[in-house]
Every structure is written in C-alpha cells, then in structure tokens.
Image 1 (cartoon, rainbow, N blue to C red):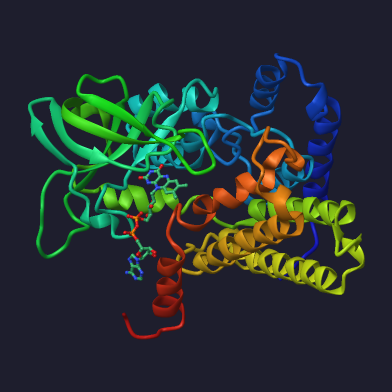
Image 2: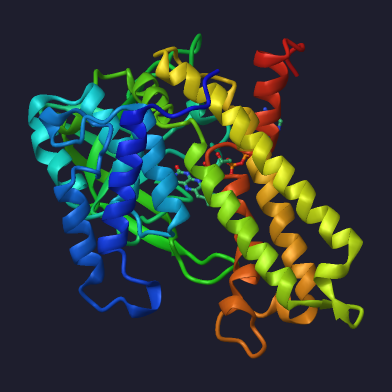
Length: 386
Ligand SMILES: Cc1cc2nc3c(=O)[nH]c(=O)nc-3n(C[C@H](O)[C@H](O)[C@H](O)COP(=O)(O)OP(=O)(O)OC[C@H]3O[C@@H](n4cnc5c(N)ncnc54)[C@H](O)[C@@H]3O)c2cc1C
C-alpha cells in the first residue's frame, strides 16, 4: 500500500485549498446569497457529481481526486457540493448506470443543479432489514404501472419532488429478490399521501408515504422490469470507501476535545482528568483504525475491484464510535448535556443533545448493527448462518 500522494494529486489538493480560501466565507459571515453562489461556483468547477462521466455533466474525476476533494471540504467544514443529497448519493448513479438516454437528460442536470430533492422508498411497515420481502405492488396497465401500498421512514419525503421507489411486479416463491422493479415517481402524482413522522430530536424529516392507485408512466421505470434488486444494490455500492466519513469523525473529535478544554469535572479542569484523557486517546486510535481500514477499500476501488461485505466493518465501527463519542460528551456536560437547541443552559447550541437523540441516523439507516454483524460473521469470517 502506497501512502504517498502523486504530484498531480498534491496539485489537485492545492487547487481545492485555493478555491476554499477564495470562496468559503466563515459560517457567521454568510449572507442570504451565500449558498446559491456556492452551489453555482462548485458546479462551474464540475465538482458536483465529481466522479460522474463528463458526457452527463459530471466531473469525470478519479477516485483519489474524489477522496482529496471530500477530505478538504470536510476539514474546512464547507457546505455540501449540492443539496440534492439522495440524487447525488445513489439515485443519480443508478440512472447513469441503468437509465435510458431520455431519463439521463431529464433527471441528471436537475440533480447536479440541486433543483429539488429526491427521496428513497424502500422500507415498508413490516419490511426493513429484509428488504427483498417488500410488498408495495405495481401492476402494468398499458403504458402505466398502477401502484398500491405504503413505504415508511422515507427521509425527506415531506420536501421531495421525486421518489425512487421499489415495488413488486411479480412474485417468485423460489426467490424473493426477483420480481422487484425500480420506478421513478413524481411525489405530486394523484393518489400519493405523505404523512410526516416527528423524530425524537424534533422536526419531521421522515414520513410514511401511501400509494393508492398511483399511475406511473412505464417510461419512468429504471432498468428492466423485475431487475430492481440489481439496480438498488449496485447504486448503493457507490462511494463506499468511507474516507469522507473519517474526516467528519476527526472533526467531531476536535469538537469533543474543545468541549473537554472548556469543561470541569469534580471542580477541576476536565482536561486534567486521567480517565477523560485516556478516553479521548482511545477515540482517536479508533478513528485512525477506521481511516487505515478505509484505505483497504480505496485500494480495491482504485484497482477497479468490486467492494462487497468488507465495508460493513467500517459501517459498524463508525456507528458504535459515533454513539459512544456523543454519549461521552453528554455525560461530561451533565445537566446541560440534556438541553436542546434554544433551551436554557444548552451548550454548543444543544448540538450534543440533538446528536444523542439522533443515534438512529448512524446506527439504523443503511443497515442495523445486527445486520452488519451477520454480514461480517457469515461472509467475511465464514461462520455458519444464523
Ligand atoms: C435515520 C433513518 C433514515 C432512514 N431513511 C430511510 C429512507 O429514506 N428510505 C427507506 O426506505 N428507509 C429508510 N430508513 C429505514 C431503514 O432502512 C430501516 O429502519 C432499516 O433497514 C431497519 O429496518 P426496520 O426498521 O424494519 O427494522 P427490522 O428490520 O425489523 O429490525 C428490527 C431489529 O431486528 C434486528 N434484525 C433484523 N433482522 C435480523 C437478522 N436477520 N439477524 C439479526 N438481527 C436482525 C435488527 O438489527 C433490529 O435490531 C431509515 C431509517 C433511519 C433510522
């Protein structure tokens, strides 16, 4: 494994740093136009959809450059490169890989321009970890599919214009992965009802979405009928080196150290407490382990080898680490660690309490810890199936 960057990579890092020096206004000095200008500028640089092919409007960048871009952006706490998060993370890559020319032209420019939000309709009230058991149904009638059923925990559904939906178009008792189809559905289609769900930390970014005789043009099918499982798996496999997440974890550690510096324990500065110092060192060592493990994935990606089960290691590691770091901060803060946002006595804008109540974001979303453990046990360690 070569840990050195090439001259070209170092030059690219410098280009990103220069751009940030010139265009990244400090968070407390940003005016109302900042975000619109920022999105326009990063788009002009072709840093939105950085690794997507140039023909569809992406940057055509390579994996190492993408890592550098993510690292630099995260270390300077820059805003995201686009606000169409799900579009950029997996809907866009899936359309690029499986979409028709017409679908690429219709959707990709809007995703790159952050025109609206996408949401993802996979989970159902009785279907989560075992996603292939999904029941939301679509029946073909001429040039349309008629969709009936419900999806739940659909992030961003209250604000999204489109949903990337998995439906069942046929059943095969031998294989539940067959007969699943991916549809791209407009959220204002007649027959769709969005019921927001409030979360513990406040606000309603989730919803349960109901489909009652919703007509979806066949032209909005992504990939072949019955091939939706493949479409989903390959698009979710996009960008999984976890290097970007490591930078974010180091950021969180810095905030934690800052908190320790300004806190007291048993009447003395918290930074002098041996237990606290040791715990901070343990967190740092674990983040570094995650970074080095991420290089393994990166090496495979550079060699164009497919990534599979091994990414579960960092996903599980990160979920545990994030929850433990947040709990540590809340405990250190004592009573004020429980105060949210504008509540009296809230520290750091109540962000630690909010993070503590948002643990499902890192732990459940994208596969629960138990599921990651099963993957590691069965597919990496070769242990018997449970
Ligand atoms: C923040 C957040 C955002 C989300 N956003 C979306 C979204 O945008 N779109 C979407 O479709 N879904 C979304 N989800 C839903 C998410 O994908 C599911 O919650 C997740 O897949 C788990 O499914 P479930 O809730 O049905 O739990 P279940 O699958 O019922 O699991 C319940 C418990 O049983 C355990 N378990 C299940 N199967 C096994 C097994 N085989 N072996 C051992 N233990 C097992 C699980 O680990 C868990 O502890 C989101 C969830 C969260 C928390």
